[in-house]
Length: 187
Image 1 (spheres, rainbow, N blue to C red):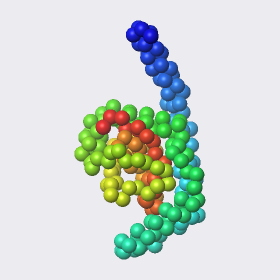
Image 2 (tube, rainbow, N blue to C red):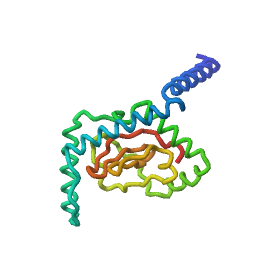
Image 3 (tube, rainbow, N blue to C red):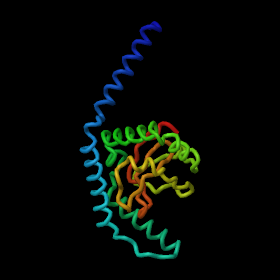
Image 4 (cartoon, helix red, strand yellow):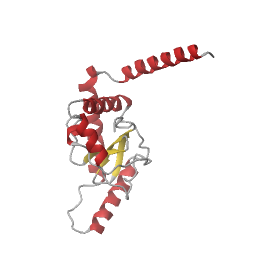
């Protein structure tokens, strides 16, 4: 194949992938996509409340760890087939990628990127839905400016950045609920 044909084929494939990506998400879909995300989060929390009511406050680290383990086991049993994309469907993931990219390209983008670079970086971590957040790794916080551009979460759940992925993290169960791979492309 000549280099000219290869270049034309490459351009065609890039245009085709851009067109496909455009169908996955459109700004006009924002309210419906956010509503779908919120419904999926609500369903998860309903299941969580049925499986494991809020733990009793304690000052004991060992009791707290034991409670986290019990809650996590109950949630894993309640969601045995949980997989990446159950909450962050392709359309919802595209929305989140768009919001994150817009934030990074916006007025405060430089500050957000600097915050992500200066936080304890978490790279090359294999992520798995329903798995415990890796114990030896820090829970990197999500910059407030970025949080302002993402749908609000109930207090039981948090957004976390791990490498380039955006996690939906259940702090009570210490579980990865779902994640968007390659969500943060401009560290």
